[in-house]
Length: 257
Image (cartoon, rainbow, N blue to C red; front, side):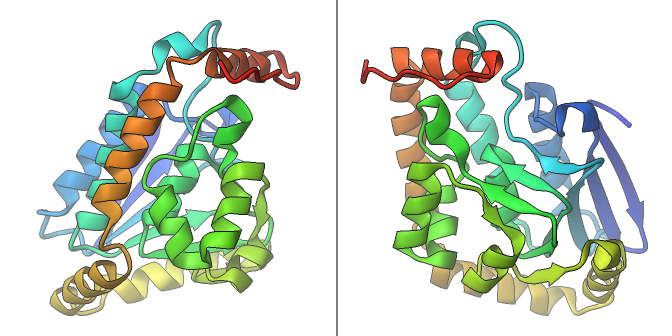
């Protein structure tokens, strides 16, 4: 394990496991950098045919690590650049990327999961764009990937109301590719990964490129819009209040400042 992640390669599959279970696998800056590096390297590795992203413990990832006092002071445009680098590495990789979501996927953790080509969700999983709860807007390309999957109305509901979408509803809405009972989750993930690892890599790469071009043709514009909007929001008093309220486990009082 290194930088809060456990990384291994097995039979053509690169397993990247977020491994801070006590913190619900919240991403630190170091983890985000390492995740992007591993994803980028995998694109050129002959021994990797499929990339798997999952979390250890009860969660996939709670998103960015907001722990500590005055957490808003540690977030700036570099945080957004880290998130965007991860999303570009996932969507731009010629290798199939699988998100194995065993629990909550929130914030940038949700964005990363939904950028993957296949999302295998356990029955107890959920998907949360909780950015508005702390005075922010979705980032990590979620304004494009979520709307492309579930449509404008559901995307607005997730983004504005910050409501978690349970796995069953996410599957019915087309947000995830697989829904399995918790007790079948590991076996299903392994089966999907083995099939992809043994499949035709050139055909997979061409398919991924074509489907992403048809459905996420404006992803790059979305990433830049999110970067601009989020950068401005990070300087507001509302975000400072939202992050303090999150740390103090209370409801924030937003004043539009």
